[in-house]
Length: 145
Image (tube, rainbow, N blue to C red):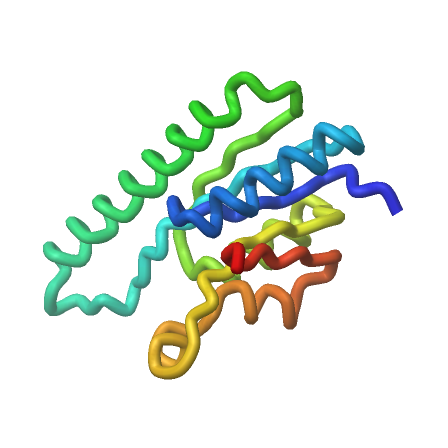
C-alpha cells in the first residue's frame, strides 16, 4: 500500500516534532502529501458562570495553536514535500479521527509523551485513543530511549 496522505498532529511538543520529522522523511522517500494538524482544545463545558474567562482561555488556546502552525511552517519551508496546514478547535482525539475520515488519510504519524500512572488516568492519552479508533495505519513515535 502506498501512503499518499500522511496526517501529523502537532502540539508544539518534542513528540510532535519527532513525528513531523519522521513524516517528512517518509514523504520525501515515497512522495506522499503531509497534512499537519493542530487542535486548540477549546472545551464548551468551561461553563457559563465563567463565560468571560472561558472566552479569554479559548482565544488564548486558538492563538497558541496558530503559533504552533506558524512555527511548523517555518520548520518545513525548505522541504520538497507537499504540505497542507490545518488548525481546528475541539477535542484532539475526536478532531484527529474526524480528519482521518474526512480527508481519506492513509497513514497517521503521532507522537506519544509516554504518560503513565495518574497523569495518564487524569488526562487520557490522545495517541492511545487514536490508535484504538483510527481507520488507517498509525505510527506512534515515542521518545528516544
